[in-house]
Figure 1 (cartoon, rainbow, N blue to C red):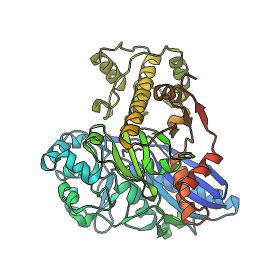
Figure 2: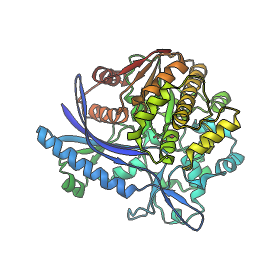
Figure 3: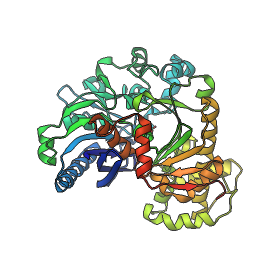
Length: 477
Ligand code: LFR
């Protein structure tokens, strides 16, 4: 068995896991779990949304300390640490490594209207052919154009994506991991490396961008201060699919290539895995991205708004996820065929009054307006399932990849009603689980780098399938 630590930040929660991996064996033990969320800070130009990366760093260290304690109890050293987080956001470092301000959240309003300005300089279809990305207003390229209105770029010497920033604090290594680089809009979709013309389009100095490395690269030992505080004496930092979705797709327990996935957390990333990108105008119009996966696979997917909408409704009601069970049971009793809204509407993107937005969207679409809480929840879940089904159909049509099964991984796999509605809407069976696909994908790529497991993604996935409890939902079941 070899032991590996996975640091995994999602937009609404973070965790540190200890993974034990060997031939035919894969087990995760949770060392720490903590809340996350963007912090709104008032300012002269209106409110700004930042990530509390210092708090996340503190929680990571505490989690790694716990990993160290668990490993000592097991009598085995921790071989490596890997970090994955949400994509696109970054920190800027001064020449001496000082972090210049708390990174902005991708939900910050500073990118409003920026993409449209950029597309006047390079039409959207041409940009798509270069970077392969669906239109998301918060892609790093657009954030960097907005960044030029602020003071930080002038002092910056390095730009680090969030997982690479955590990696830098852990090890001192300055680099950019390829799966996450592919989400910035600054990379060539064919090579996965920084593209000079796209960097120029963002208006930044190419020298800010560190060298790109692939998942599996061994980045070096931990800083002495980190070793001292965590007790991870022998661990090295190993690059994983640092974009959480890339790691989650590694952790999909597929048994052949005829599968679609719904990596369902704050976002729901819905798509298929391909060998080559799809870059036509039709694919752009359907909102498909070609993000880079581990082993240079293409994650051909679309961002569906995800559990963010449900979380927002719960927050409006002063409830949290512990209150969800009863609401879901009541929502499941409601008849099918109720209100469905377009959860892709950008109105749902920023933080704000989510119940009102759902109700307004129903009204605007001429649908019955849900008032009682279970009806609102049912509307959100029906809308998500409808969107998942549409995206799966589009992915099949545009990529030519046939799909026999839809894998739901991540937190959404725990939501039985959502999984059943997804199976119904897709007309295909849903296999739900594992919930911790991202952490599993993270530790598996580390374990492969250490030689504890071997093979292609298919072999790693077979190990996930053999060691996870999965729940099957059939259409109409
Ligand atoms: C999911 C995710 C998505 C990305 C969004 C913003 O956590 O990483 O893949 O589009 O967050 O970074």
